[in-house]
Image (cartoon, rainbow, N blue to C red):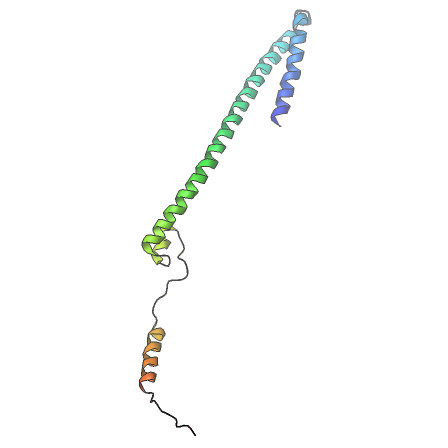
Length: 134
């Protein structure tokens, strides 16, 4: 049930208890039920007040959590940038901190090492030829 519903129930019961107070002596055995209902009304009112206080505290805690998350996000981004600056944006070391390197780390493969050497040998074998105008 919603909080308002409990407050309405407490008010309805309280009206009955207070209005029956003058005639409770004439009701005989029903006086015990009147007393029990009065005790339950007091308990319900107390719990409603407690729930409202907790709701207010929850709202305060939620606001603090939201603010801390915003501040923490800024600090996180700055520290992430510090780690990236220290290790380099494409360093595999970043994975250790839960960060993904920018781009994939490049390793020199055998094929890539051979290509520049081959290009140099091809250029070395070229002969400069001058063509005479016709």
